[in-house]
Length: 329
Ligand code: OOG
Ligand code: NI
Image 1 (tube, protein in one colour):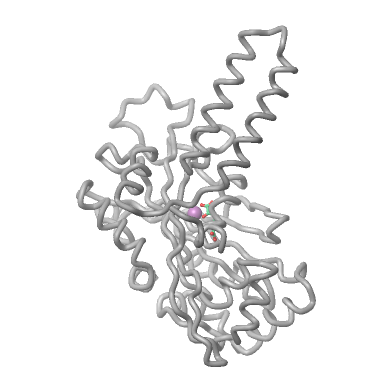
Image 2: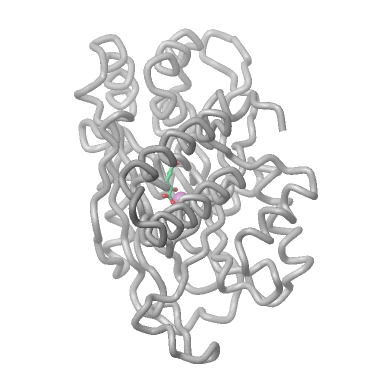
């Protein structure tokens, strides 16, 4: 799966090379992520079964009502045999799999998704194999069908042309050794080298900040200390958002991602058009408050913030959106 991903996504490949040119010891993957159609047995479970059979454990569910998505994440079995290598040869990553709630789409969009999953035969049984081979388990669609889906759900259009391909790998920044272990420094480094990061509209966020400041001011007007504290927190969060980093409400999970690469796709009607492929993500998991007195050398992955966050993920999904792909750097 990683080989297919690196061959198709020059940005992800270059960034991994760039990071290892500075931090040559080991690059650990925090997680791997996949997208699926939640219909006729083609959903999360079609891919999850392989990981479950190899000892992964199912964890929390995440819901994205506006995007009509649901996701599950899986934690890896404890294994120390692989701890020395890089990438897929390193410590086992978490796995994040989402599915489109196809029943909630318009009849026309449902028709397209159901048409291709039906044509796939028993493709869902070989989801992981298809991902590793880089093949779709259904035929290439018509360009008009791709466009129709894209108008309603960019996730649906992405999945129709990319199938079970790895959607992204995530570099675990806190497990790096150089100053890139700080996600902020890593982001600056990536931007300095000419790569574009996924960012959510800065201007809108600015207005939102102003509005929130006024609300907080009104709420806490007689309590100066509290007001100062709340403002400080607000600005911290705002700074993170304008530098493309998503922060979980507890402040312990920090994530950012690149904008997806594009590839020409030959549709079944002969049209060749560029479509979004995959991107690369960065995650920094901070040490949980109850372990903050441990020394640097004592801190293990299990002492850090685990899991995923709906707010962060909601933004990361946009890494393959047209808005991000066509945005000026
Ligand atoms: C997954 C987006 C969410 C995360 O780490 O929260 C995500 C996707 O784009 O399919 O990767
Ligand atoms: Ni991710």
